[in-house]
Image 1 (cartoon, rainbow, N blue to C red):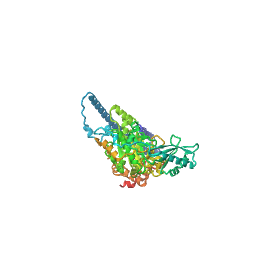
Image 2 (image 1 turned 30 degrees about the vertical axis):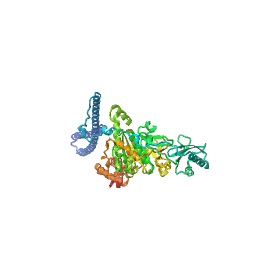
Image 3 (image 1 turned 180 degrees about the vertical axis):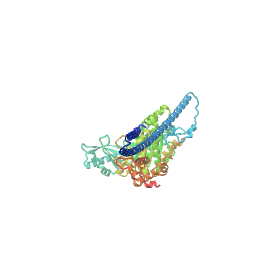
Image 4 (image 1 turned 90 degrees about the vertical axis):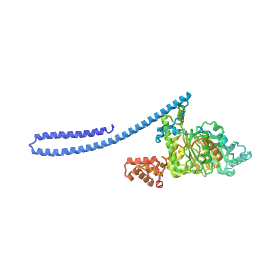
Length: 624
């Protein structure tokens, strides 16, 4: 320990110098006694001088000895800390060495088996070793973490399980009605002295978009201000104005069709956009006004926020997303995590083999499941680091080349976010934010939905980490701004009519969501579950007690001081190191450790400059 060596040597040197001066003084005094033994006055002075000198040097020696003991105690503390660090490093090195040896042996075994198979020999299946079965606490191996087990090869659903439909817009709006609407629209513009011309009309599956060409010097805001007047003159319930249409010199005025064209999910799967698309994780969105099938890539999103009022088509859209994943991926390629607080939306998907945990209905258990996802994300990052790759694509490419198991994608779908935010806002928000910020590289993606698009549910943290959004019909402009940061969703028609904010684009696309019935979903689920085993590999026993407000597991794993500090924070709604120092009469280091532990357990929020930390736990939750 080079740090304390200098203070120690200086202290010893000071003691030595003091003793040396004391001995020299005593020797001088002895000589002085011999020369002046007959002089009584000198003897008196000598006696007084010799009495004071030892007392002074004894005091100095004691002081230096105390300083030396304190420095030795500090050295002992440093030595213990260094020994603990070295011991931890040795344990880590030993663990990774054993892990490397195990995987090397496994690779050699696979290589020998492959050679035997090439040579035409029959290779029996080997049972797991006894040591592996007897060590349940061993770190999760790569095969257990990444490779689900199915009894038979996965058979993707066929298109004949879904109802067929025709994508024909002819007849939705008669030419006579279209001409009448154009005339009324032009008359409305003229009556308000707006220099603009109705250029043409594009008939979509649910709405017709009239493209308006403004005259020179006409502000587009002048046309947007006529929204209610246009709705009145054309006898429309909802009118949406897009001013301007992105990339075009027109202003779009969208009116609902008298007749609607139902878009079946099968027509999307039969389209060229789905069959020839290059998306990594394709999900069906629907058809836009121009009749183009929209298929998004969840890997680029990489997370999706869906919001809309009851009956707007939100649940059907989420069913479409799940069916899209079932049609494209096997359980070995993609894993599903479903959270359904209402317990009715995902009931048809309870048996799909892609699920790695039964559908979760309880809010507290859902928060524990999100914590497990965070842990799985960290585990995947460790695996990527071991393989020296940057993302899941690089890992799977290396797996295909070297013959080890690929890493499956994981999609977490939450049907009603509002219930989680009401019961465990801090826990749920923190976990979702961390997943959204870090999980893209390891192939974990989330889709969250809510029918209550208020700022208490869709918070600033959620919006910042979910740039890709779908808005169905809402009741007010305020709700629309909460979802999309702009108005427009309040003018939608409902029943699958949506505004989609695609990843990487600064414009909204109006899309009609496909329709799928429960009978079709049952046929698809029955098909994918035949011959497949459940793969519920997630164990939440170590995460159930980590939910804010649940103190059973907290009391088992924390000392009394932590519980006392947590009660103080919950009672006063204040969380700071200096505050705990004063209330608990403890040192700064201990108080800082308690604050860090509370932040790690999501009982309090992170430090944000001079703003006080946010407290997520209450006395009511602690008393449960």
